[in-house]
Length: 183
Image (cartoon, rainbow, N blue to C red; front, side):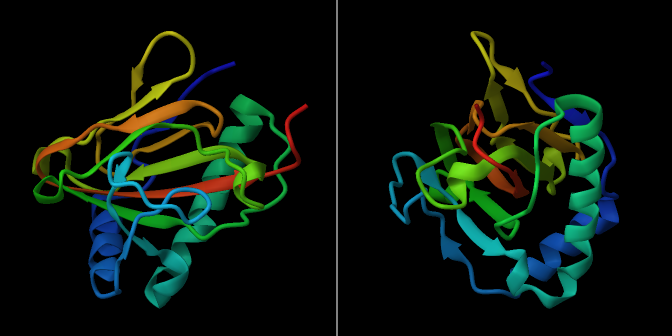
């Protein structure tokens, strides 16, 4: 099975800028872990949920189409819903933004049903240093594309991280596709 599927130019640069701009007008929340726990040692970022941003209603339809096509062609998982709103994460070097190694499947009612994770790179990669999305599907670490507008899709059970930001700010959007438990 392919560990990481990339879709270059899934969103245009203008669309990425539009998403970032719309999210800046919404109150941000400190990023939490599954179970509403907080650990800045593991994760330091600010979040906006796109369900809270009226002008981003169009984004979810695009994400659903991308996941549907990728899953059909690559993963063939039993997907049934999107039980959680997409989140826009902002990682800042000034806050030592990062997200240590973790898997997206957790003990929560929605988190336990996560099957695929989709991450959209919103920022221009030249606007920050560090902040790489790395996936470890087995013994080797794979880096996701830093190209603005690129979507990376991988199984939610894969270990992954966002390395610490060295300078600048990184914006990304994440959503999960859900289905019955793996057997």
